[in-house]
Image (tube, rainbow, N blue to C red; front, side, top):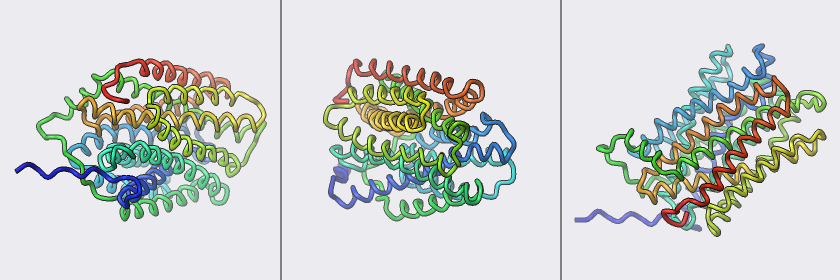
Length: 405
């Protein structure tokens, strides 16, 4: 007898759609609050452990490097074992490590825990896009992916705001404790809400993982999207890493709690990612990505302005552009991989791998640029990354489509 047909996927208005979207949204909040929990704390960590600004950025880059490695393991594993179990396990491990960070005694131990935490946090970006594309009806998957990315933005905002507030009250340990509590609450909610997979089809075990990974590197569009991910994320994290030092230095001299308020710009990123997903559903992904990248580049240039309000406006503009571009590009990867008969989970994991490689490299180099020549050097560095991403996005817009991508 032929196998039972797979369900069509959850549609808009159905309980399954609401539960899946909310669960992945909350997972994004937890993961990105924990992933970037040390970013607003960088000056405090540098003072507490007696290290340089550039060295302190390893508290962020170490986690994103661990996440990048985790993606290479968990992405292929999810294609064979399923999505939900990996997501739940990763969230639980990450929250345990978040609690251990509160009592870590030394700088090297903190870095080790951050790398391990990053590996555990890879569970979400390794499976989220593939899960949403599989379990939701095609008519709403782009919208849900946009909501997922908006959860990432809100998580990043929550971690930074909470960290900035608590570091002023009780130091960096109190800040990390508050974020650990947030992570635990979201992890429990995801466990209760996330619908089990109904449309997952495992990749056959007779298809070697290395061969499948190699297949994801044979499509020039996927390669271009990986490059865009690395360049955009490298520039975005570089700006925000260096911004924490600029805001606490003269002439602004802001307290950590006040400096952390600039991350409210992430709310704009949350809105722009959802809006870009809707727009891409109407006009296609190809014209949306280069426009969003150009907006990000304009924001980087605006941060050169001396007055604090204009600097903040620049951060807002680049945040809008970054999240819009990332939201559409990440969804494009899943659609392109499926159209080319490639494993979607592995293609999405490779996109995220290069995304976080960019974060690790760009975030660390930002500290060096700041130490060597101040903010103008940071702008030159990140502006060059945005320009490279713009060129790639324009080229991709002219490549042959396998279907309406």
